[in-house]
Amino acid sequence: MALKAIMTNFSIASSTDQSLVTGYMLVIGTIVPISAYFMRRFSTCQLFITAMSLFTLGTLIAGFSPTFSILLLGRLTQALGIAIMLPLLTNTILAVIPIERRGAAMGMVGLVIMFAPAIGPTLYGLIIESLNWRWLFYLTIPIAALSLLFGMKVLVNVTETSKPRLDILSFVLSTLGFGGIVYGFSAAGKGDASFTDPLVIASLLVGLVSLVLFFWRQLKLEKPLLNVRVFRYPMFSLDLLLVMLTMMTMFAMMLILPIYMQGAILLSAVATGLTMLPGGLINGAISPVMGRLFDKWRPRPILIPGTIIPAISVFMYRFAVPGVPIVYFVILQVVLMIAVAMIMMPAQTNALNQIPEKLHPHGTAIFNTLMQISGAIGVALFVSVMENGQQSYLTDIGITSPSAQDSLDALTFGSQQSFSTGFYLAIAAIVIALFIRKGKQAKISD
Image 1 (cartoon, rainbow, N blue to C red):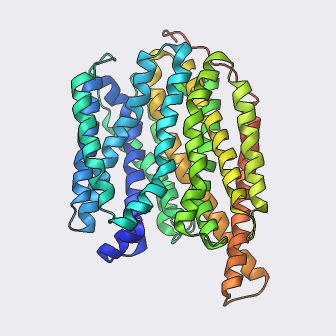
Image 2: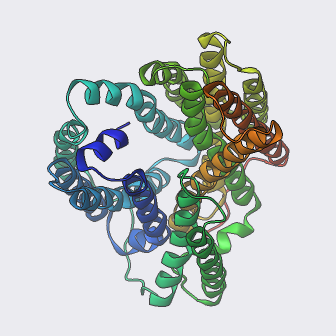
Image 3: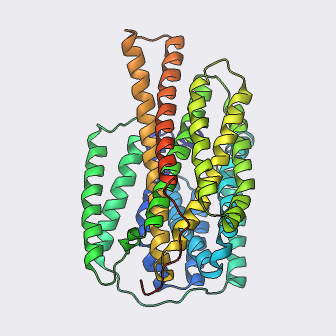
């Protein structure tokens, strides 16, 4: 919401402006994989204080930044705090909540995580319109500071610490691997680049090669930096794959839909935000309900309907052509976000429930890392499909200098191609859900 205002304020190009997003994702993608080491090395309180201190400091730097470079530094500092906080949150729940009540707890996490992005576009749009983009940081500073002080007063340590050795080579390979993948897909999804861009190709190649070497080294080490043996637990792997497909679709739809609604349906930015608001709010509201249902039922009665619903919703977007009532978009978005609530937290809880307690930090790190990567992949994939569809439409009708109507028709065609891609991913998710069973926690000796 603030990128355009920031670009104008600092007189920078859109590609430079986008580094606030790609840089943020890059830091999270490189730090979260080694969070398992942090979880074993430092106490809950130490990690919380460090994470919130970094986030608060980053918010201060960004809010009062005199130049774009300082703003970027503040944003990256925020990301360092978030990269520590994300796995810490999940790992703390696994440590303090009994397995029979984890669904409800993870559902509450889903409420918090989805409520913010649901109201964010609308709220931040009003703030930027009434004040300026710096107030997005100013208003966050007291909230972050109070959270830090409250945590320092009431938080207790819930995990045991040790002194594991940090394998430097594994750290370097992890950084190059996960960082290269996240950066490559993030850059390819910006709109001014593509998968044929040399930098994108180089980043993905370096990332893939480094990841292969990283995984190979983890299997050889007696005490790996990130224990990839969690993948031998079938429900962990299946649930993770299901969540990744869901993240790809959700992240991409949250990007494609505003572009389509503003570019083809000709809605204003505020109207677009209001159209997408109910779905996010309902998602947050029912996430705790889905968590409690998971505790009472097996995962299949939740996950199978949860994967069928988005397939129907995304398919119906193909009929959302210019001229359809706005309520059509609202209903489809609500249905899609209900399905996301039925999948995300139940699948993640089921996956982490199966692995032994000693592997929870590793499982949490892998889950959070691959969720970030799948989001970047989904955005890049859907944007690429949309842009190729637009170009294909204009080529097929033989127009080199398209009119406004031609461009609108091309955007509609390209967006529908993206929706078809989402439908295919949703079908794949249905197939995976059919094989998921309730994960029974393995013994510690495993």
